[in-house]
Length: 297
Image (cartoon, rainbow, N blue to C red; front, side):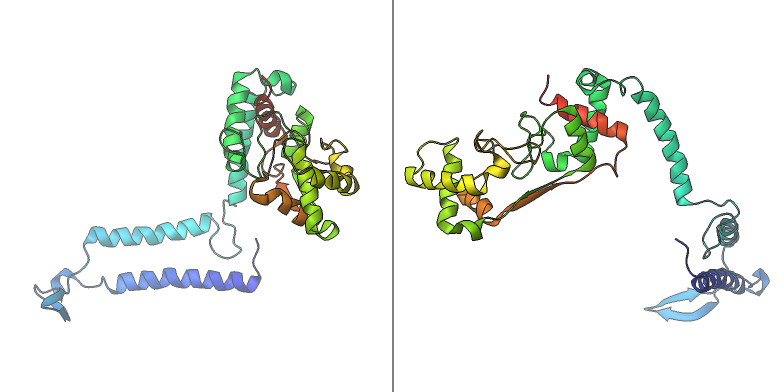
C-alpha cells in the first residue's frame, strides 16, 4: 500500500533523526579518554549504597553499536523502510512470496502430473493422491466435518453416502469450489403453533412409528401445501435445491428435544464456504476425490 507523500516524508525524517540521534548519543558518551579516567570516578548517581561508576564503554561494545548503526543505514538503502522509498533492490513481500510460491507450484505440478488428469473415480485408487487429499481435508475441512469426516450437528457426514446436493464427483467439486448456501424458510407464522406440531408429527412418521394419527393426518395436508415444493410429495428431498431427504432418518440438525418443531417454525440456514479463493483447481479436484473416496470404495 502506497502512503501519501506527506506521511512518507514524515516517516523518512523520523527514521533519519533516530539514526542521527543514536549516533550522537553513542559518540558523545564515549569521548572519555583513558588518560582522563580516574579510578573510582562516579557519575554521582547512588542508590541504596550502590554507586554508578563513570567508566568508558569497552571497545568491543562500542564497535558493536557502531556496526548496528552502519547495518541499519545499509539496510534502509537496499530495502524499503523509509516511507515510499522502495530500496535499491526493489524488494517487496508480495514479490518474495510470488517467487517462493512459483517454486512450490512447480514442484506440486510435477507431483500432481502423475494423477491429476485421471477422472475422480480412478484417482481414488492412487495412494499418493489420497494422501495429499487427506492432508488437504485435515487443513481445510476437518474443523467442521471432523477428522473422520463424519460431521456433527449442522455439519454433514461426508462418509455415509447421504448427500444434500448429490455425491457425484462433479457436484462435490462444485460444492468445494463455489460453496453452498442452504436456507429453510420459517413457517411458524403461516402454520401457527398447532400446525407446526402437525407437520412435525407427519415428518417424524416417515421414519418413526407411534405418532399421533390425528396430528399426522392434519400434518400431511399442511405438508402438501407448504413443503412439497422443496422436499417432494414423498419427503425424499431434491438435490437440485439442496432440500434434504426427510424419510431416511438421517438428520443434519437432529430433531431431538423439539428441534424439528423449532426448525419448521423459525427456519434455519447453513453455509458451506467456497474454497476457490484458498485452493487452486487441481487441489480442489484432489480434495474432491478424497471426499468421494470416503463413501466409494
